[in-house]
Length: 339
Image 1 (spheres, rainbow, N blue to C red):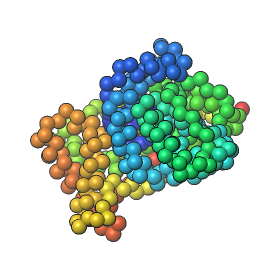
Image 2: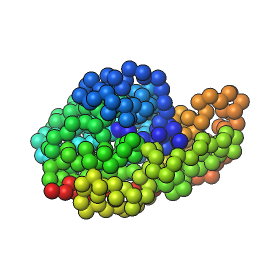
Image 3: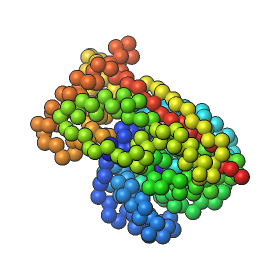
Image 4: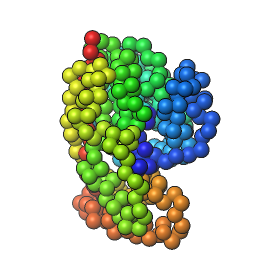
């Protein structure tokens, strides 16, 4: 879809922990009109709608290619687990700039139908532009429909064989209501496969940069347990209970851990370590919780933060690969629609 750690990843298509708020006062009203939602129900997720139609959506759209590369190993795990089949009808919740939707459309072929749904208009515009680029090279892709709507409230019909999400479901105001509605999109026995972040302490790729910055800038107050946010679905027992209450059966969870390449040396770099470090610094400073903490910082503070970040990140440089590498851990949840 779908943030206090702010900055990419706080919501869905993943990034560092959360995404940044922006100014988009008309976005919730426009979304209501397009989705057919009642204004009073749309207000449940109004803060998220504003968030992703403002600065957060702009950042994710601008960094789309970089973030898709970052999360590629996690995307591959989700695709393997979901096992989408040719000819299936598939729903991608929190599709963002379309990476997962496009990959599934390519893999499943012309007889398949894939809907990508998201609350971010700028990210969906990027997804549509990317679809045109992909179809020029892959004319046999499945049919795609892009929907600007809130999956917690959208009026689904039971047509989907599979619902998927990469970091798009941790931000609903009421997750039981949201997943009850999402279940309605599935045919009886339809499959659910969603990838969500494990706890902050299990994600050095986020924790290490944050710890460096917190030496200079106080962290925001922690979110209450279970509050919408990037790590809201880290507790497997809680999420399995949510899915059960929402009408899913056979809810299962497993942890997956992969190394993420935060920085990669340029092929033409003379100093590979410095090149990889600059790449990692660019990502950390432009997106995610570090960027959010620096939003109102002065130039002196920014320079000091950059120094702290550089010192922390260079400890994770892999000389053989020419990369800054840190671990990421996620929860992969699977279930079926009861009935």
